[in-house]
Length: 342
Image 1 (tube, rainbow, N blue to C red):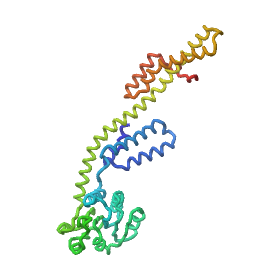
Image 2 (image 1 turned 180 degrees about the vertical axis):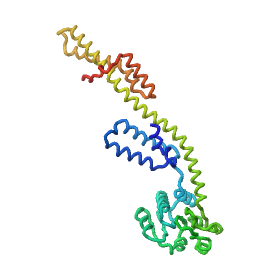
Image 3 (image 1 turned 45 degrees about the vertical axis):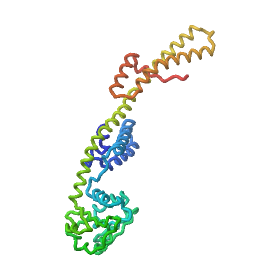
Image 4 (image 1 turned 90 degrees about the vertical axis):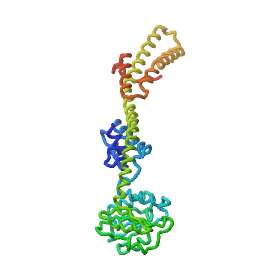
């Protein structure tokens, strides 16, 4: 129980709080529920795990903050924008590999919809166009790199090139970015080795953030997630108690049936004795009074023990209650009989 709850909450992931795992747990539950052997108990456990995963993510900060270089680049870039919004911001991305794909995914999730991908060849960049149709993605060849940078406010370098592709001498003559972005052209270099020159920071209207800067953001977010994991464990303890309470209530079902079965058997036996003593002079109305009286007494007597069996509590409390009632009423499997109608 602990394991599946922690997995669903993202505590057992390589990256604490990783969101994709919850979707995977949902998928496993959906597929497994259509197969034999995945019964009531496992289905309920997975449903509880899914609930726990959602609760942990909504009530703690375990899923917030970038924990990869590409997500950190997107997050930091948005933080540096004066408006905190991508509206009206022109974005350029150098490269069209796996890192760019992840970067575009994170940017789109932050409502960054206008970007130009610069690459040595068009096919890979065009694949990204097709993969993210909701975004306005333009693709150009590398010979248009400087023209693209001149028209951009935020530039991400994510290519596989081993050379410096942009330096201060390339940017110094470009027009200043608009006031919307603080008059600053910002570069976020997630390439290894770096594609942007350090001398960009010498310019009054340009600044470059490299992988080391982004790693600091990632580490801070990882620390925050680790702290949130402690809060998550408290919530998971509550979810576990809920599931175990449900399990315990199922254990009480046979005892409830036996208790009611034995009480019904005694009621019917004593009712027949009363009818025999009254003889043939008893009227249907009197028989109904006797029936209602005996049933009312039985239900009143059963109310307290039934409530004890159905009440919430820890597993051991339920087990103790079941055992005590079993001994007090002398219940056996033979007492579990179908309930009679009124």
